[in-house]
Image (cartoon, rainbow, N blue to C red; front, side):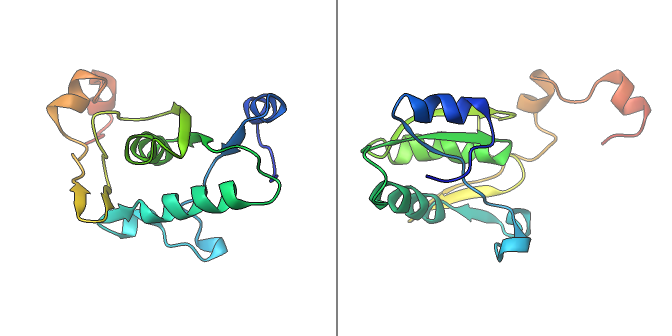
Length: 137
């Protein structure tokens, strides 16, 4: 089901897994640009997972999620919030200690964005001397 963008997705599907790489920042398709909102609502992710799992061509009870950048945050959050629906996550480009620019929310719970200039980001990369010299802030 769906269009495969990478060999990872194809390999997992060939092994019988249901794979979900969710679009979340696509105004071209009628979705809001996520960074225009204070929080990203995980209800969108929950509905997408349920829709995929209820599709007639799906025989699995859980999905494997793939995410990049903010998508990594959403995958890890979905795996934590919905362990009955998420088998695992493949992520890249993530700040695993919390959302960076846009917070995340689900029901009455909110995870605030930590911002770009925090001790955690400076420890794990932050700005190099070269970046500071070029004026990156």
